[in-house]
Image (tube, rainbow, N blue to C red):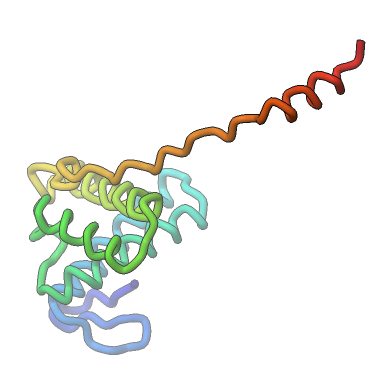
Length: 148
């Protein structure tokens, strides 16, 4: 999501369409964040993953006319709920929230916000799977295969 910064209210998207002021704020914020990730040496695929995850947040927030500095922990929890309701796995929701935390940590370090609202949003707990237990016959077969 790149933008031309001639005038904030007249910023345009990659296809040349005019962005709303809120969408332009997101485009600028995500562009600066991506540049900081590049400067830190993160790989292209990692930056693309962050960009995709944060692009979904930007799209959702822009639809509610909320810019990057307008979101609090309640809105971020609502966003997590929306992506979960759309069928995203717990691991996907957790990964997207990790990207959101990194973005807001970046805004905090730049002095654009006073506190990181994403720190108050917990990731969903991962499913706990019990290990498969061997049946007595399988244990016997396994023990018989051990060389003497």
